[in-house]
Length: 341
Image (cartoon, rainbow, N blue to C red; front, side, top):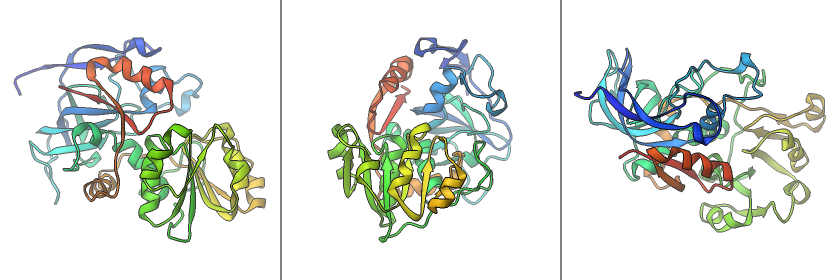
């Protein structure tokens, strides 16, 4: 490859969206087992702005190593440019010119440097891009899709969450299962809804009223506008709650779940193990991990029309600041993506 520099978004200090700089950076070189990807689009995810802010409030022992200057981004869709040593091995080996998607090095590295024209990635983190969608939609799939998959379908690893020792084991979903998804219109939520419906479950979607039509089109059987009524006041006897919002308020969903059911907070909250045991409810969470094989399965569901990635908005790479400002306003419907010309 003739060029040695590229355009990228870099952080030289921590702070608000204004610290995101669009500038020249060296093109990375793929190491053993890695490929160099020419980026066409990058997904925008919460860890991106956590990293931008320097993860304030997170204990040092829970922070993965990251150093400035830093190129943010973990989700990528693009084309294989070159292969590092050993990256072309395996039955489903990649070749230059292949279109790929991936969640890069997560959570081993907080960020995978996806906000750039080129990025290196472990070949095992990548899957072939779904052929039925463009790169912007494909870039919205990796982190959110794998989070939904690892919570609801298959964990795919045995590493405990840094926030809980108990091993997460997804509940089997079928036509006899009722699932409530809080934050159903967001990145994880709208994909989790579709995966639960794929398994035959009845789904109650919780979001603000502006998202009702969108979520019913995705298959929601029931919709609750949280601005008008609290789901914990009107729902009882569900098998599973996937709370994509999580945090301190997640405990309120315990009253909606039947004995023997489960609560999965994507962002862990404050729970009492004794209370959970008395109610007969399992509360577990996990931390999403890169997984090219699972991403391949998700891509097949996209190509089959079973799962649709919705885009809230797209921004050129140079406007990453505007993308982060959009994320900060909340009420996102689907995903935000950066496009690389």
